[in-house]
Image 1 (cartoon, rainbow, N blue to C red):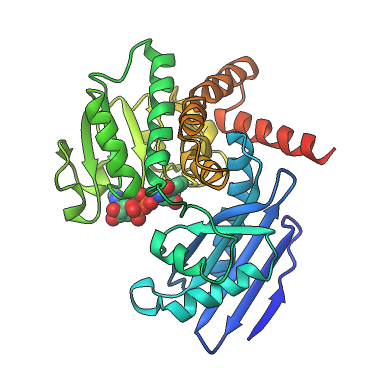
Image 2: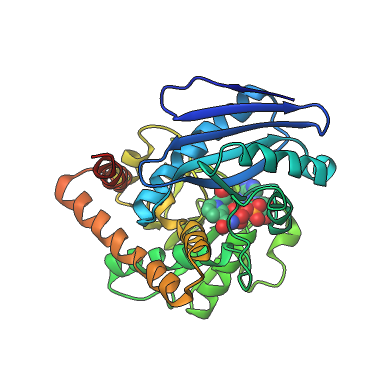
Length: 339
Ligand code: NAD
């Protein structure tokens, strides 16, 4: 087994571990711990190269710092990635080796689930380290809280634009996975009209809505677009084709490049910053770790509406994009914690 530090000026710590005995090839990145221990899921993907895995872990851990700060929870940003094919390579030995990697950081980093890992995997990792989150007794998948957070922000954004609730509004959901399906259920209950899409034809089964081809979902003729699949869907190419007035979804890193937030604003579309919309899951992890006060969790999820309204107000006053305002609020909180 060998472990080495990877220098990175933007991050507090980046480590790579190779364990030939179990086949573990993994990075852990800790971006910032000004607000508390770094928290973030462990992703398992068959990355094309170690460089691709490194770029992902750096980007995602940085995003976690901003997400925790905007969500008002006492954690910093961290993330882990394992280079492997989950369906083939995910063994107990591999997950235990990952757990030992997490444990060696002595609580500086708390791991949880992400793409390619399940709650059962996090429990397996938790057999060798206490530094795991999201597996408290009596709680199910934190994706429900993520979907509730997206729904809350969507309702607040739509109310800001129209003064109305979501009944009768049309919503295009891209990606009917853990978050997208749960969001669809909440929207259905609220009386919204749903347009759905997934690359997996079976993923939309059992959900009442119109199904469109994946390449047509962003330009569907709807009120609201909810990206709940991949990152980078809001780009120089897609933004001119969006007819929705509000973008609010669960996907991480929705903006493809610098300038995309400005392109959205200049088209008169309201964008709910992704890490604010999808903070519900990490907020739940905080309450699970703190004893599981469900009433407090739901109050905190509901408060995301106020945070979004605050972001919108500041953006309107300053002319900045909502993405830039959210970043600035997060950075102010991190800066204040460093004093
Ligand atoms: P998931 O893997 O369960 O679901 C993603 C779905 O998107 C899958 O059904 C997949 O087939 C579909 N998809 C992939 N490419 C697509 C495309 N081009 N068009 C349409 N559908 C496509 O993942 P999830 O847990 O639901 O997470 C979705 C997004 O939300 C990810 O970006 C994730 O990082 C982010 N997120 C999730 C959580 C959570 O609690 N699960 C929390 C925060 C952020």
